Image 1 (cartoon, rainbow, N blue to C red):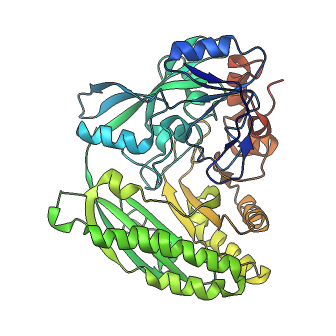
Image 2: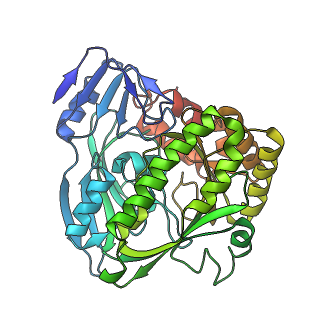
Image 3: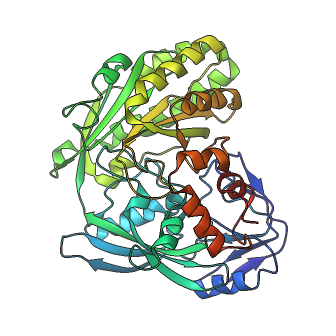
Length: 444
């Protein structure tokens, strides 16, 4: 195990958080990690993955555990129904996991649109994709292995230690450090992606109903450009393999790298330098991306490269309130004079029973607000948060927000159960930090 005591400055991807841990360790196996926890000498312990949380979830001034060495595939167990239970190290990156699953003829039912995170970080913060009949990554977890506060290595699932399992699979690492995760994978599949710009009002009118954009597609999302009434829609549906409909490499590079990253970076820099141009920039941008249709393996469709650095807030709201919320944000944007060059992203998910899932108990729409790294975000995000409060919105655990445990307890029916499990599993707050104290409450 590598270990350091020298001064280490750590920053997250969005540059919203930094830390100087007293020690940095990179355990090679669960036993080494357990030894670190047992000999922590009063220091708090926090695992860090890829640093893609916008919040202080991974911040510590104690022991920072880097999970890169815990990234192997332990086993693949086929199931009678054609699925498989796949156990992987907690530090495996999603893009690596996707390649490994594909080589085994497997895939994930649903994924988010970024694949740089570790699997442990993704599930612990409630990462999700889009799909009205599908849950997030944590809903695809069937078992976990973790090191607890007393240095014990334990396993948990729905059948074995189910309460610990609930908080371990989505709980900000508050009951232990995950070392391995067992996921339910499905037979590999391809998606036919249809992307098209449409008027925002048409999109909102067509969202609902059996043949609507949300229920009529396996996966649907859209991006709305503030200062305009235009949106870019993305509908992905399972399809037979069709080599003839693959995206040409040049077209893919133009759309995903040149337009979505290169030109987008330039337009954001221009908006930062000349804010008054933002409405005009957005009007051009909302029409610049042309429609395209292609078929590819599911993980290649789900994830997109993200090379323009930004800050993000995302809230989960009752699905039926999408139009109301977007109308309120639009009204604030027009009245405030703030210039927002980044589009808002709207996605959908089925209700689930994961205790701290943002989709717990209700069919959900997700609305994510972004702001370019070089532009101020606080006033805009706080205005969005006030709108979300009117519809009992739940903030993404890994994205910027200002809610605390008192308010979150009102939004989650099982919140007190989570706190009880945490108090029993970690009575001294070995795995706590300022962010978990704020959003889950201090252990002591």
